[in-house]
Length: 130
Picture: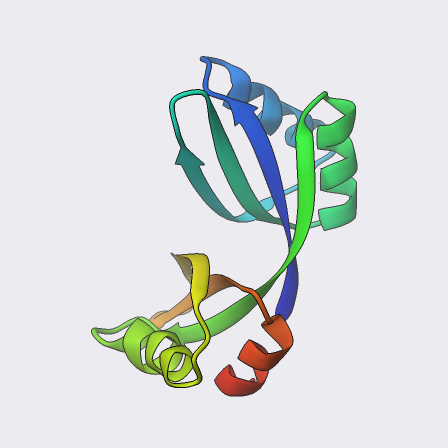
């Protein structure tokens, strides 16, 4: 299923992540999934939020550089081979390259969710199914 992701470019300095999280807290916006990647000067914080539009606006108002992107969310079994069988192999066999992904455990036992970025989310959604 398609989802909207908020990406925030954050300077790699103490306190910048706190400022970003405080901005979201002031508007009671929950983070459903989170990934942080960094290099020497800045980091990219990718998030699935409880309210994407409001969260992006709040972060822009707080002075952050924000981008919204369409990603896919796919449930998968939380067991050895779950990622391989549910996502990686089907996309590979269809010739679809993963640009990046991150995953989180679902509160339901035995279940995880993966957030996927691909060049063609419509095609990937058809390959992965519901």
